[in-house]
Structures are given as structure tokens and as C-alpha cells.
Length: 128
Image (cartoon, rainbow, N blue to C red; front, side):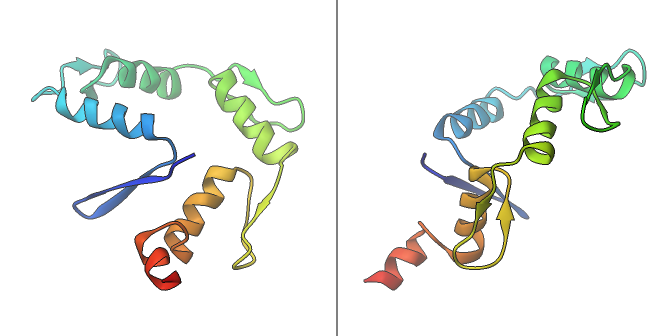
């Protein structure tokens, strides 16, 4: 998996998959000038219809996906499964440069890239 980064004003976005960067860039290119998808419940406006749908589900719907291992309830099966994997049956990924431990390999890879410059130009220059 190829880690990519995109520097923007006042922030850095990290993409663990090249396709995620392509999707992000396409959204920016096709972004309308005005937010044309208003929430009919609270009035908040969104640039994309799928963002409005996620907002309504999270903010205005009742959570219906309970975790069978604890008392948390989630708004989607995807979030429930992500919670179970990270909290109740984690496969842990340890950083070999420090004591940090992560539930997801992509989080470890992002950490190593940002904190230890592993896989970056800075890393390659130091190896030469």
C-alpha cells in the first residue's frame, strides 16, 4: 500500500490509498460554488448529497446497531464493525521506533511517516 500526502493551507491530509487521493481531488474539482444540499431538519448545508445523508443519519436518527460486548450503540453496521475490531478484538500493530501501538496498520504507517519520516524523502536522504 502506498502512503500519499497532500499539503494544504494550515493542514496536511494523509491518504493511505492512492484511490482515496484521486476521489478527494475529484471532489475538489467538481465542488460546487454553493452548498446546495440543505438538511430539512436543522438547515445545515452540504456540498455533497452523500454528506447530507451521513449527517442526517448521525445527527437526526436513532442509533440502531448495538455492540454485543459493551453498551455502545452505533448508527451504522460499518461503525459498529470498526468499533468491534478496534476495541474488542484488536490486532495490534506496534511501532518499532517508539512505544506506540495501533489497532490499524494504516494508522501505524501514517504515524511512522509523520513522526519518524519512514518512507519519506527525508528518510531516503538520511539513508544515502
